[in-house]
Image 1 (cartoon, rainbow, N blue to C red):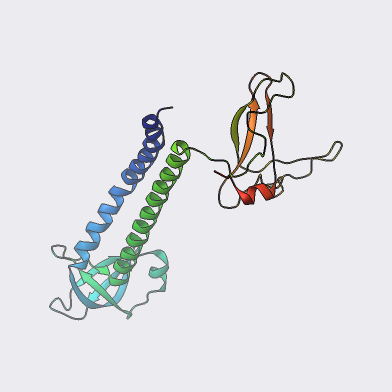
Image 2 (cartoon, one colour; image 1 turned 90 degrees about the horizontal axis):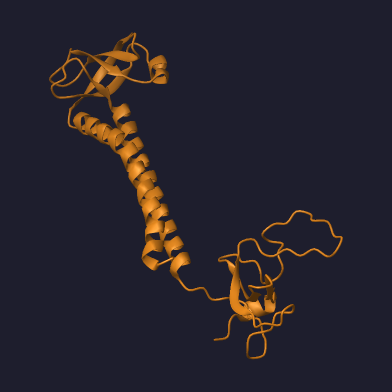
Length: 233
């Protein structure tokens, strides 16, 4: 596949995922931010709990500032509503242009914290998607080099079946190559139990190999020694 097509194949799905995330989060985040700004610019005052309303709200009486004596209602959660008792003193914000309504300062602070956490999580997720895209683009476009070396005399080796020259390449491995002697149980193969030189901690193992396309035969050398020595040249 051409490099341009590979780049599009990597970044178009990632861009689509990012667009969907932003579309889902943008509306609620914008509404929450506008509400936060509206209430943050309001007048702060002390208030006293005087009762409750049926729709999960506290009935409060303002006890400080120019609106002393005014009653207002503040929506809250069930836990806060159940814990509040008459006479409790709570700090509230009185929004401009909304007489009879108030917002608990604790609610505003919790909303601000929630907005910050959601925005941070969204930023981290987008960053991870970008890093994934860079990793995939590098994997798809960067020429691979084996990190082991099949030490042979000059010239391509001959296929053991048809004796034709074999094509040189390498095997990119995910979980190593697992070997069992004849009659040995399969057991539980895992990524750390592969043959030496066929597993990798920080990156994929790339084993130098030769292949005969006609006979479907692959020959390679595994060795932790050659893996450590790497490719010479």
